[in-house]
Length: 278
Image (cartoon, one colour):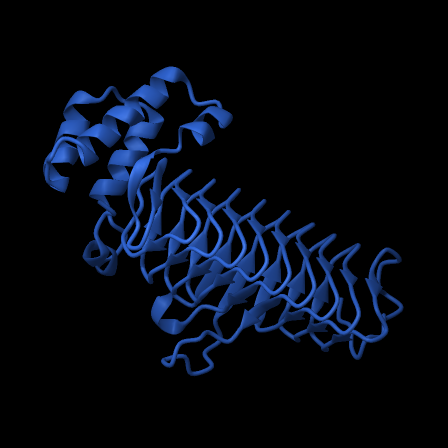
């Protein structure tokens, strides 16, 4: 369904609401039950799935898809042009999953040609006020970004990671599953799964045991991850030797395997250069 100049076409579902002051450009696709608040701008290439709520003064632009039931608070900007001097207006994408909460003044940029042309946010994430997600970031599900978090371009975030207020992450860094970044952390290297880091530059500070227990990991799984952590951070081993010892001595489990895979399989050459936070 396409809407133009804030007018609802006769074919629009009865539950769809567009405030008279909103501007929805011709070509935009709106699902059932979409709500668009005052003075919002929805671009021509945007697709809003069923039940999406766009609050007052939001801008959703570019080739952007927003998943079902995602709610966007006032003054957020989705699908903005990347803050990358190499960007030349290429037809890149932003894909946002379902059931996200995107709070006031959040900015999420489109991808760039050099980064694969895609910025992606999974489902059930909470992005608090002033969060910035730069171009070509790939974020999984159930993550929490506190106020003022900033991700540089090409950052990869696994599921259930937690970012404290005003922490910043360098370009090309990976953040593992259920990692926790303390408020104000300046993260310039990869953070392994289940680990916590803090400081400038961020250094390891134990495991996210509370998060693991809340996620109902067993005592055996938590014990295995503690062994992984000791070998990586407390045994005075090189990364290669620590990985070898983890593989040989820690009982196999989903958590151990994920931890080991993260250490041994950087996604791209740039990530090899970032290294593991130690």
